[in-house]
Image 1 (cartoon, rainbow, N blue to C red):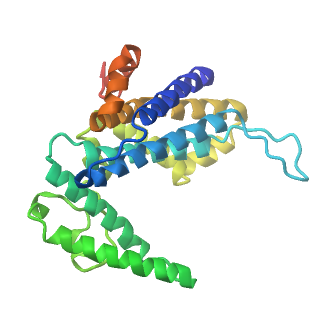
Image 2 (cartoon, helix red, strand yellow):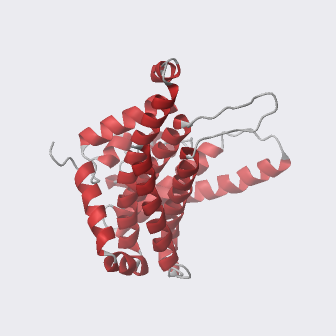
Image 3 (spheres, rainbow, N blue to C red):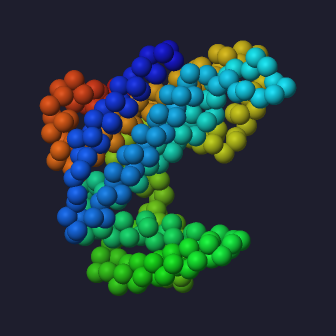
Amino acid sequence: MIDSSRDELKQWVVAIHHCLEANKGYVLPKKDSWMADSESMLQKSAMHSLSVLDLLESTKPTVEGIANVGFIDHYSIQTLVRAVLESYLVFYYVFLDEKVGIRIKKLRHKIWHASSLSQRQRQSRFSDGVTGLLKREKSKYLRLRRQILHSRSIGVVSIMQKPQLERKKAFDWKPQDGWRGIAVNTYLSETYWVDVYNMLSATVHSGAVVSNNMTHPDQRRVQEESASTAVSILNMIIPLFIEGYSKIFDRSNQYLQSDHDLKFKIEIAKGVVSGWGV
């Protein structure tokens, strides 16, 4: 089972590479420069996917005093898969949501950036370099904040912690319903989203399931099955990323349209996550 999941992930990683290469050298017009972050999100997910492939080969650390240790770190794999899933939701909400126009997407992008900058202000200033960096970021955050609050569209954009934004405090950029509020507008069915996110979060947040897995007598089977399950989820999310990226950049779309097998596999993935047969 783990071999088939791994082989499929390798195919998706190659597809990501071709999508990015097809767009290599393209410079966005100045008015669209904010959309460059969409490529960063896909690159981030590609890195996570490559790390997952590496982890699937089994970890055999070379540590003095420890010999013959080998395991599949399925906890790290699940953490990486959740990171890819969350990255896709950011990608969809900010750059892809077809239910809103470009003005709203640009505003969401500013809110997303302002939130990150605002939360970093809580970091301890333990060096002159950090102090200077945070001072510059605070200036950028306050500039974005003014643009957000003065926007004509602010009244129609949901912000989870808008009062904190208004008081110049650290705030969460997500809509009122959080990740679920984004997921319900994507291809993900609510059942698929809830089950998948709860499963991954139980590991990421060190739920009791971690203890259950560690005390199982057949550790190798637990590691392989847990890793395979997580990778199967990753193999459903990456196709959505690829299609979404191709909707933004014409060169990547030309590559996608030329590969009928890839297009078919993406449609299969969309069908699975949207609840085929449910």
